[in-house]
Length: 132
Image (cartoon, rainbow, N blue to C red; front, side, top):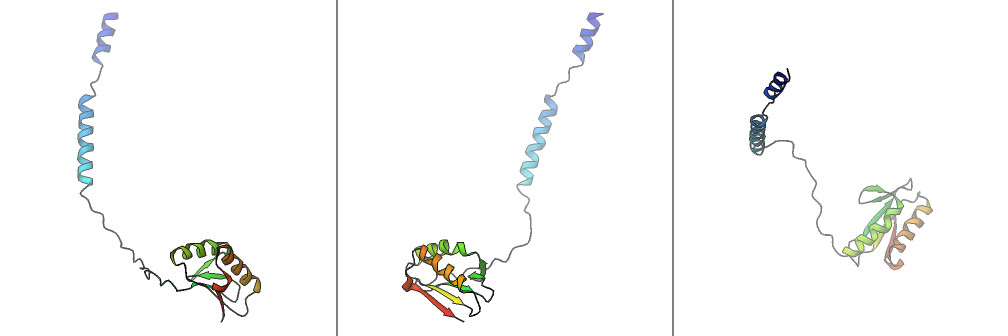
């Protein structure tokens, strides 16, 4: 009885080598064919920058009637003024800061902007205010 069971057990071994060979061949086939497929999609229309700014072009900020602060047409937080001024001053050391302010804006917004520019190392002589 033991011999019959051991013979049956010996006969039930399945050799997986040919199946693995086929799987690897298929894997290589799909990798090779996938590298030749070129996907087409939409091309985004990315706006190109103006390029290099002149060394004397001002670092311009705008305060609107609701006392919101804008830089380069984007709404920003007042705490971003210092890093913006530092970054622009590295690229253009002689560039002044220009604050364009609406007359109905709160004075506190101007004072905070002026203080942040001064913290960035901008001397008061190079900070200009334009009331619209």
